[in-house]
Image (cartoon, rainbow, N blue to C red; front, side, top):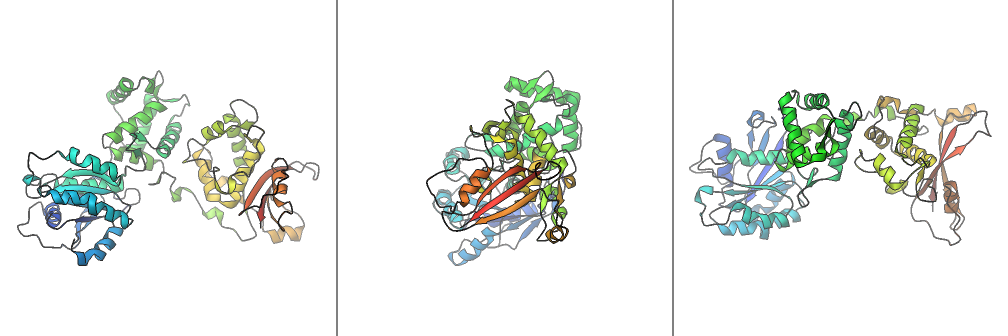
Length: 488
């Protein structure tokens, strides 16, 4: 399952800039000339101008710009500036000069950290043809260094003279940028990272059209066509499920490939170095390199408003949220326990309310579970404060409608005052006053928290949001959500 074709732009990248660094005499310039010309230079210049490999040089069809550098002390500032502009670093040592290998960990890698260069590093042993057969293997040499410096993406040996693995050096550098390992996989634990798991779970659910908890042969084929523009042959589907069932029996059941099996496949792809397969899947479903939905999938034109206007959820969005609350309220007690809330947001990058203004701002029951009023109020607060985030999380948890139908912009406040009425459902009130005047107690009372005798000064902003039943005040019942902020 999975094969990728070139597109000319991967994850938004239209060019990859690779900077080659290392000690003098390790073969930096020869390596660059060799990949660009398929020949070994008899006399490589001490410093090459920028070298560009065309889009069709590698399968991803993204051009590569290679920057040569000087390791002379007087050029140190220039080298640092180039490293800071790099998408990836190729760090060279000479296989026949042990001192250059030692300087990777004693100088070059610490120097990159000092410069705060946070891009993938490809360690390259040049002059493989001069390597002593009695030397330790590449794996033996590099394993302790890679444990110490996690920024190293991979390591490889090559020979510009013999044209051995020269093209592979720059392919790995480009691949580390276009299909990075770090967001997907934890090298230390050899497991998929939580955000990757959550995104793949959402994709699995979107592809499980009959909602039976498994991808049937037809659903697997639809997934393959969507992501890779090519169907799976029946024998290939059988082969995929066989690989999974042999390693992980619970990965396949009578209905097809389970979520556990789907996640196992992607971990297997990554372990085998086929990161492009998982990245292709994520990008086809709208994810960026941070494994969040791309900005272009979140229409922001609808968020334009005057200073005296606000954004609220529509009745369609509120009905969806009530339904999703009921679906995840497994024990039917009218509240979401922490685990139930975690399950609800398990297809989002993380829970949106674990910190910041949302922490301790909503109604919970005596057991610490979020009530329906608290749940809807938190969404109203998030929509008021950050509508783009609110829209993204609605999509993450499965809102099926047009994103445009999620929000509406309220009428301008000056018109409300002129007409002596308002159609708003969300009101933001600012609470201010001297210390120990009862501001926090008022906010706590709004969300059903008991009065605390001991006075503790509030530091920073404090929000509280809840639903007020206005049925006794007006002729029909509606929810009005108050957002209070305490300001010292």
